[in-house]
Length: 235
Image (cartoon, rainbow, N blue to C red; front, top):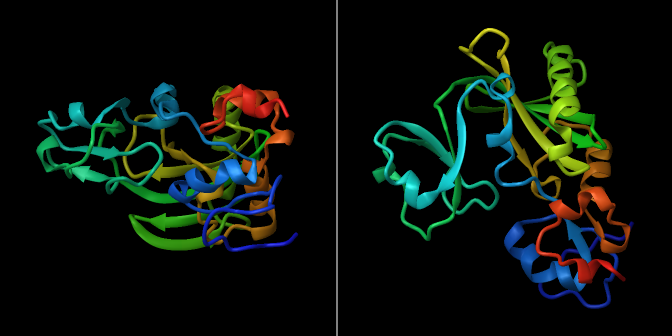
């Protein structure tokens, strides 16, 4: 494949793939005729408690500012403000009202990034332990069987709520209710994710599907396509 680093609007590059940030994608996706797949904002909030290990709600930044208790608050997609634990809503940074995810505060002993294609984990990597960067391949990891077992159950039960190509972050909770030792951290766009120590070839398979030519977009993925109307997909 030819690889080009874009510095501005693309010219003559139809039917390409994309890897990069969402702000730049908004400028070039139409010119590249790329279909950008991303999970729904509210997906984590729709999951059963057995897969989250904590309460998660979709809300707005304005509503979050009214919180009087500590909570983890993050934007669902773009990194418009730091995803973090805020002591109260008054500590949230200024900015326009926008969707946010609000969840109970938990501690992750280990976090793993999984590259998922058609409901199957193709590769993965541990990326953090206790909030510190600690990259290690999933393959051969002591937690690999447990991670794959949890992911398989989640994807079988709730996988229809995700695009066919997606990055899924899962983690090991330090304290949890019985049966909720492993939990979902979040889901992300594969075209805007660091693969850490995952197999890069297998990760690339997922990235290419997540941001590829609109002409190859599968029917099931239309609802996960960023800023593309049906009229744009007809050709």
